[in-house]
Image (cartoon, rainbow, N blue to C red; front, side, top):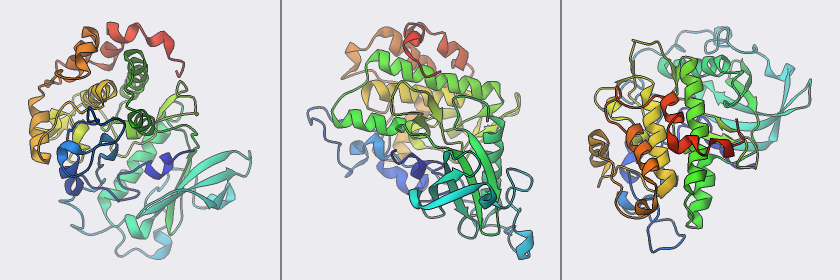
Length: 374
């Protein structure tokens, strides 16, 4: 079953990673050292950090954490029950509908635990993520993050390439989010398995995966949602068959988008952040195309397109957006593939391709028929 639920919503439910504190050791680096066989490179320097250990960010902006008055202060116990979800979700008593199997933990972190649960009406196995309110939701910003993600999951509930939310519940101690239980691998883990055998993806395999991901992006944008954190940790196969549906499973940084009203983002995954975010944080849906472009580069080479000796150096390289196709394996990669990468990693978001334009690119159109996951 893998460890996807332990990583699901890895920004604010578990709190074990932080972009500011960890980023100096994982920036834009070669992912596989040529001549070293199947071994992952060491962690002694930023150049040698594996993509599989890329840090994530917390949902709380570190500049704001702990500042101001928490919504918890002054509330009586009975008022705290619905302070997070309010009218969202299934109600207060999750146990009326689901049995949580405390013996089958799928993941645990600083603020929550994910367990298998059973729908008492249908007998279906699902996943239940329980988030401690006392440990986690001490800040208005964090509360809003949970609300927004629950809203987005409900908004996208009928979309086939998004993990399906079954219900959201809140009691005086925890918020519970019940979702479908996916049984395949994280895309991240599938890539790590390839890396362990020094096997990169063929162009056909990479194009199939990117087609699936950009189809998700197009669907999100058509529904007024920006994901804002496209990376392999946030996609998972529905079953053990890696041609099964690839689903988006994490919306911790996602937001609703209104055309003409740029969003602002202070939190991001360093290796996948778009340059317009670094220039001041205001951005639109094209940040998702940038993230998918970075991922395509990684699929074909197991290297990041931008790197530096430290975090600042790597982010400066992202801001310059000078994509390099020197060295292995790029001489063997088709011009069409490199053309698509360059157009997805266009530094000017106004000139960057839309999701629909990406899907119409010749390199993807030739292989779409081989993908059976949509």
